Length: 439
Ligand code: HSE
Image 1 (cartoon, protein in one colour):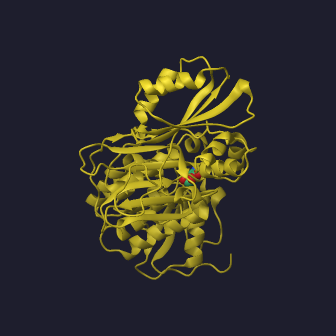
Image 2 (cartoon, helix red, strand yellow):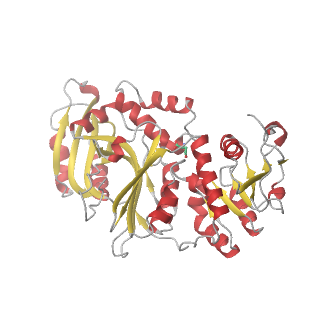
Image 3 (cartoon, rainbow, N blue to C red):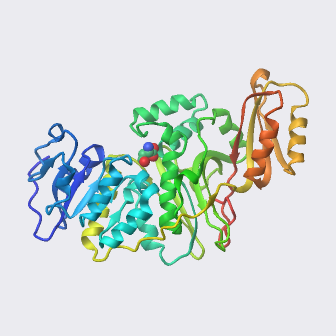
């Protein structure tokens, strides 16, 4: 890697890294290669640190004791150990010891962000977490600084690279099954340690809770955001989605009530998005975040949402922001906000049935009883009658009403697999007023 780094000038911000895995190593390498005058890497803390030690980082203290991050040789602790335990406690200890903290830990910030931000504010220190959402996309800073002059009402995005990789693989190759595509994503190192976190939406909902805090000032408990898995999506759904002028993405969205009198509506799950829309154009492991402001309209941020180097860029940018800034930012409101998942809009329902006469008539009766109007019925020719997939799309209605109708239809005898319900998100109006569910 070339010559050893030069000592940073006096007054540089001294950095201690907790967790020397893929991202920790990328952060150390970036500090070494970019050599910013404002930063000096002084300490690296990892379990069994001897096996991590490398020679080319210059005069760095290697330790396995967290206490070594809390002493006079460190100004900013970079937490990259992941998971809530012991990371959350280490962040508290660092702030209480008068250190600023940079973290990539979405679960800690999604669950304890407001309390930790308040603790940082009281200590007069910074807590920054750009890397926790969207990897290398500087979306939190852009919202905090660049959109501070607007009143933001809605955030929608593709926030999980694994799900986007899997869905866009199935979209591009209808012979590629969900499990084949997921195996490929695992081989590429995109998935969390437990890929269910990606597929079932828990990773994206943690990121959405952080975006809600930063963009909308709402403290939403992640476990209150409804999540649906992409595991039930099949290649046939892309064929039907295309006939409806759409494709399928795992979408995370939250929208606040304009008057603040109703709970915000938030959900994470597979959804139909208009072909050619910003959400549809995001392919492979990329992420996109679309923020809607009352005055400025829509702003989109896209790029690499995961991976060691993009995440390290976000961490380093946070470190430089701390080193260059005087006052820590304000902490947002700490009280939790209520959230509902009852999105109103058109819906896609794929039934897989053992064919016989009268199925559509029976389903139409159930929908009529729930006062729900059918928009279209789609059926591909040539499907096997023993496992026949067809789609009913519904005109705009509340998700809760559709769920009640589907529960009522569950007792009908023709289902081979449970129906798949996906919201159909609509194109955003060209300008001005927001439509619920618009993308
Ligand atoms: N597993 C995550 C993803 C990594 O697929 O987006 C970044 O959080």
